[in-house]
Every structure is written in C-alpha cells, then in structure tokens.
Image (tube, rainbow, N blue to C red):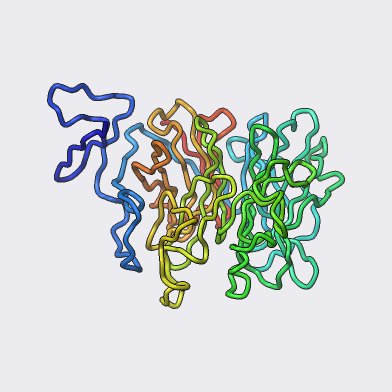
Length: 409
C-alpha cells in the first residue's frame, strides 16, 4: 500500500506524517523538508528518471553543533582515517602521511613510501587500515605511480613502524592498467568489507581517448575493483569467468570515483563520482552492474556540448541514486553512526570541492530523501570526511590544508 504525502506551501512532511488527521506520526522517522538547497539553474534541460533523483527538499540539523578548525597549514591532504587509539592518519599528495591527535596536534610524519607522480590530481591518495591492524600494523594506500610510458592508480601496503615515523617493506599489490600519460582522474578510494576484501575505485583518466575504457571489461580504468589483501581478484567476482575481462572488476562505467563507504545497516556499498559540467552522482553499487559513463550522463562537456549522444537512460545501465547539476564535485564520504547528534544517524556525509561545503544526505530504502549543506560559510574545498573512531564527531580535511572537527555543542 502506498503512503500518501502532505504537500504544504513551504515544506513537506515526508511520508512519515500521514495526511489523515487521526493517524499518529512515526516520530523516529520524521523528516521535515524545505526548499531544495540548490538555487542556481541547471546546465541542462535533462529530466530526472524518477522523482527525488535531484534537487530533493532540504533538511536542517536542529541539534546544536560545534565546528572547530583544529589544524591548518598541514600540506595537501587527500585522505583521513581514524586509528584504534583515536588519532587521525592523514595522507598528503606529496608522498607522505601525518598523524594528528583527535584535537589536531601533530604527532609524527610518516615517510618511506614509493615515489608518487604528484602532478595534476595525482599523488599519495587514500589510506585504509588492515582490519587486523591492532596486531599486524599494516596499512594500505593508493597513489599515482609512474609506470610504463605514463602513470596509473596503484595500491600498496606496508607496516607502520612502531615509532610511527616510517613504513616498513612497502609493496605494490595492484596496478589499474593500462598506464596513461595524463594527470587527471585517478579515482583512488579504498574501503574494506566485512570479509576483509578491499574495494578500490579507479578513474577513466578523463581524456577522450581513455574515456571509452570505462565501458571496457579488459581495462581497469573507470571501475570499482574488489581484491584480496595480497592484490588478487576475489573469488566470486562477477567477471571472473568472462572471456577477456579483468577478474578484479566489481562494477564498471564510472568516471572518477572519489568516495566509497558501506552503509552501516544495509551493508550496501555507496559511492560518489564526478560528472563533467553537471552530472555528479551518488550510486549504491551492485555487483557486475554498468553505471553508464560515458554513454549516459546528466552532465555536459566543459565546453557546453553534449556528451556522446546526449542521453540519460539506456537499458542495461544503472541510474544514479542522486545527481547534482550544476556540479558540486563530490569527493570523500562517510556514514555517521553515532548518537551524539541523533538526527545524523546513518546519514551520508560528502566533502564537496567546487561546491565548498559538506553535504548531508538522508537515505531511506536506497533513495535520497533529504539534503543539507554544512560549513558553506567556510569557503573551503572539502576533500574528505570521516566519522571518528567512536562515531561521535565528524572530521573533514580541505585542499587548503585544514582539519575541521564537528561535534555536538
């Protein structure tokens, strides 16, 4: 039975308040929607495939929050994760990492990583702790590696030394081939699943010559791959028995994925990826599915010309759960699972680069049902966000070299 909605002039009470006067609202699912947060005109006249796929109504955090700039001038950060003791491990595009306390005090600089190609969008990118880090001190990272006649996205692992100042025995375990002589769209996010398998995102390297490889199963460009801790394809990957396909591929048809996170309840893998001029996407990832780039998109070329045939839907290709036009440039993501800010529980947070804010998305049944913009007044390009190790605070790093801590007042 479908639920009816009450539409009011300024806001709507989404589904969870019944329009019947004698019905009782479900308090723990109440969402009050205001006008969409996006007020600028879109770049295209493309129509969404379903209601709520873009420009959903806005939500507003009612809990009083405290925003602190706990560190600045830290370099060129790209990824941030929590360590078991609560310290923050932050990557730097120039080829090293740094460790900070929960309050932003620098503890150490970690060196000894393989050479990175830090030109353009390249460098030392994301980092993930081995699920057994407490006993083996292993970490995994992505970086743009000089390789062949160009460079590519690589995954390496190594042991964090006891003094936390160097990496021991750094070893490259996976390369997203083919290499290409370019400086854009490396992807590069990492996340472990509950089975200790590693999901890695790759970009299609941006240029018209490489873009079609996002659709090619014999190329690792424009993909999400699933590998073991030794870099091997995971048994049961969707294309392991497909002729001429790379067995590590989990999903394909991606442009430049810079956000990966598992929903804390459904365990569904979610991602964010850049569109071109509009068409930035949020997707929930299903094994073996084709996410359409560059055949379908809600964006345009930077020149303003249509991309390909200028279509947004095609049989056999997945629709984004949500998209933005104009672009906000979604980068790192994380789910908040704490109880300090109850209304944020299980919400998805996204660092926006060109949008210069942090996005809060409320998700229900794999659909976006509300959007909020946070910290827009800071005017920062937010590269990555992190729910703290105790899930009570939210951290964010910026391209200008700052760390913000967001917590309950």
